[in-house]
Amino acid sequence: MTQFTGGCLCGAVRYEINGNPVRVAHCHCDDCRKATGSSFATNAFFKEDDLVILKGITKTFTHAADSGNSMNKEFCPECGSQLFGFGSGGPGVKAVKVGSIDNANAIEPQIEVFVSKALPFTRHPEFTKKFEKGRPR
Ligand SMILES: [Zn+2]
Ligand SMILES: [Zn+2]
Image (cartoon, rainbow, N blue to C red):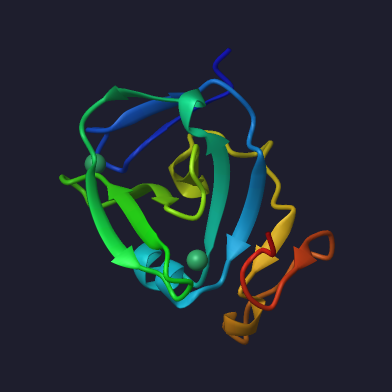
């Protein structure tokens, strides 16, 4: 059942998600900051199979993370909006950028990672579990 719909700023890429997130995390790492152009990223992780691209083709940028994993950022080639991320460290799941979801009001982060890198002005919700670095496995 479709739980969420979303897409990029220009509308060239549209998707739907047939499930609920397995995890939602604020990430304060340098890579997320650069890639999103924002002070931190909110990543909603879904099972890869639950994510269906309805329209458009994303472009993928691959880079190495501090962990040594290879990370991929998927974005709209027309408008540059970042949509999804996936990495060699998390097979079978994709991180959907919460800002690309049409109505993300029901989504709430449970954890925050790389809190040690957060910009000083960042306000952290009381209800999140906070990790100085990445999520322990
Ligand atoms: Zn676009
Ligand atoms: Zn990050």
